[in-house]
Length: 122
Image 1 (cartoon, rainbow, N blue to C red):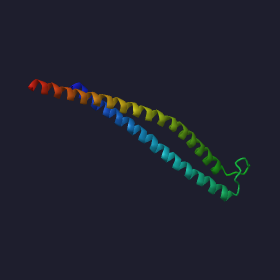
Image 2 (cartoon, rainbow, N blue to C red; image 1 turned 90 degrees about the horizontal axis):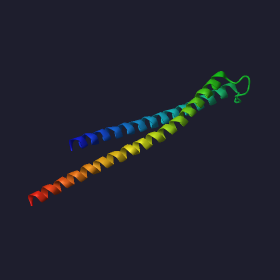
Image 3 (cartoon, helix red, strand yellow; image 1 turned 45 degrees about the horizontal axis):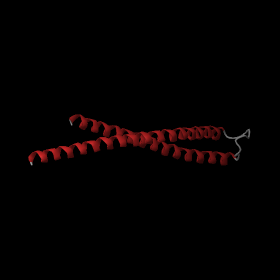
Image 4 (spheres, rainbow, N blue to C red; image 1 turned 45 degrees about the vertical axis):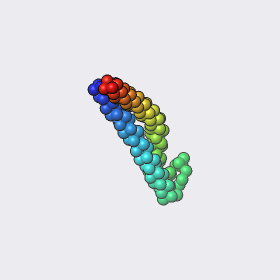
């Protein structure tokens, strides 16, 4: 029994770690998305200030070009994070299943122990 209690605590800890990981990735996705919006506004402001919106134009603002590269890098990072979050959610679901399995075994064993005690008293 004692080892099963320890195992259940371990499974709960692992589940919490998986939940934290999913939360961290979701926060990163939200932050990157916000940053992309900020960069889009900066690019638009710089293009408006310069009067040139065509990135292939020879006089296109350097700041707008560099900001576009940064924005594109963030977009690719978001794509990678979307893959990671799917993996993290799958790991979380697996950890939830493991915990449920061990908690169910614990409840079953306690019920069986109570039944055995009741039969012994009768």
